[in-house]
Image 1 (tube, helix red, strand yellow):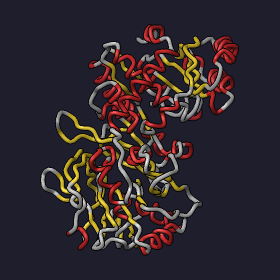
Image 2 (spheres, helix red, strand yellow):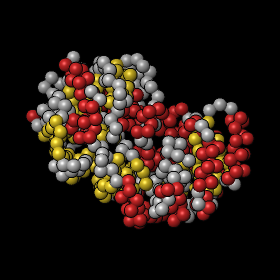
Image 3 (cartoon, helix red, strand yellow):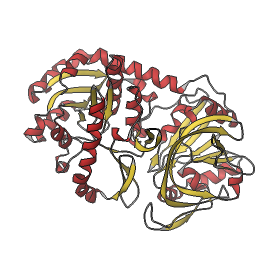
Image 4 (tube, one colour):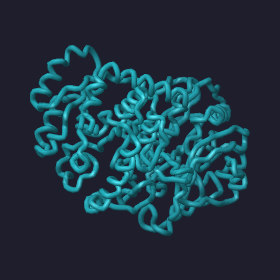
Amino acid sequence: MFQGTGSDVGKSLLVAGLCRAYTRRGLKVLPFKPQNMSNNAAVTQEDGNAGGEIGRAQALQARACHAAPSVHMNPVLLKPQSEIGSQIVVQGKIFGTAKARDYQALKPQLASFVSDSFARLRAEADLVLVEGAGSPAEVNLRKGDIANMGFARAHDVPVVLIGDIDRGGVIAQVVGTKIVLDPADADMVLGFLVNKFRGDASLFSEGMNLIAEKTGWAALGLVPFFAQAARLPAEDAVALSRREKTQGGGKIIAVPQLPRISNFDDFDPLKLEPDVDLRMIPPGEPLPLCDLVILPGTKATIADLAFFRAQGWDIDLLAHARRGGKVLGICGGYQMLGQTVSDPLGMEGPPGAIAGLGLLDVSTELTAEKILHACAGVSIPEGAGFSGYEMHVGTTRGPDCARPLLRFANGRADGAVSADGAIRACYVHGLFGDEDQRAALLRWIGAEPSALGYEVEVERVLDALAAHLEQHIDLDALLTLAR
């Protein structure tokens, strides 16, 4: 099990790389994360049927193992919403909602689901690589823990602790974690890794020795910063604050960074296009003059629409549309572009309704049923193929739905297009990983598509990451620690 001295120390990335490295050695490897908190999720299929949702990081780790993603790889997924706290997804299905304090009381009930999923994976694999959540040093949350030491102790899983030297103070990170842990928890840790090192590794050899001396844990590796990580899907919105800027040339695509933005890895393929300048617009900045505004998915459409207006982005967007600028809405962004969004059942908070941005003549009602499935088909304006997935609650209807954006392989239509063709929207995520669909979008805004094969690029980077870890971690020694 790989735990971290804090959030965003690189646990997800290192587990993905190790998944690929051990898979390349001929082992059957599977990833597992008992509890995750993220609005970046992936759709799974179980036994050929529509499945559920898991954290996108676990879907990437499954891909690194050449394994189909399963709800059992991430049995508890917390998806932050608005005032009501987080939606709780258990083994792929909505379990309920809870505020942070109430969630603590639920943990003993959720532990049985975690144990069930872990047992299933352990029975199928030669090696299960487990990712912790946050940090075990948050000892105030230790009671009933299912994400870190509580899981490790319950299932006798040895722990490797990861520290992040890039943020500074890594010696204190690792040694301080040892100090605050209960001695029985600390005994579960067999070694540590220091991640994201830059420069001459020999300059930190004394630091590695000092950590080992102070903790009694084995120094398992000093891992240099892996710049190509920016070309892989990020786990959650923490990464948006440090994402690499694009080349700065070409057509400008602006994406407002909503507080509860979801599945923002939709835009990763666009970031890699040479003729695109993709800009994630943080709160406090206006939407720039641009060629396309994309309204992204969100876990809380009504709350994020109110936030959108509070930023003045509605004024910027309407001015963009009056200038003839193009707009694309995806999932929650699709719902925002309509006339109204209503929530009669209180799916996102108190029951109510809000006026939409009015750029499409459609209206949305949020419903209890959640749509979760992979899909494929063509975009109607260009006849370009696509593959992706739906993950949403709500039904959208209205006159502009008579001009759908997408046609699924089974004949069903999705989305809406304005009468002048400048405003488009749909529920499908993952469109731009498909070369044909991405090329169609770029041509729509006057950009020149490249020959980028995004899925091929992800595979290349996973292989490069595995080779990187092979070079800087003794994988044979690490494997001997597994039980």
